Image 1 (cartoon, rainbow, N blue to C red):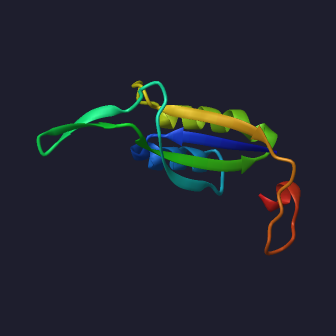
Image 2: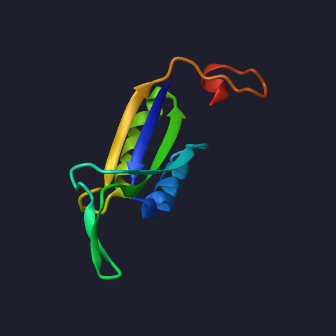
Image 3: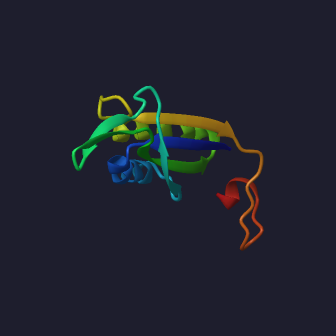
Length: 112
């Protein structure tokens, strides 16, 4: 099993959710986040004063899946989250040793 973590632009969340649903991903966790990468924030003007916004709003999506779904999920997220501009995000893939469904006690792929 693998865990995919994708950090994307907030306005792309619905597109990514739909793309994952279309390939058979049934559940995901979404967290509002702030951060920066190469873009290093930007400058804004507020009431005549200029200030730097260091941390930009992002959305972090976490999905656990079986190994054979990983490449399809990566492609779905890439296509759905792509704008072609800096700050489109990143996808991280990590191994998962065990999953336990609390309600039933199911383990492994059955618990996903």
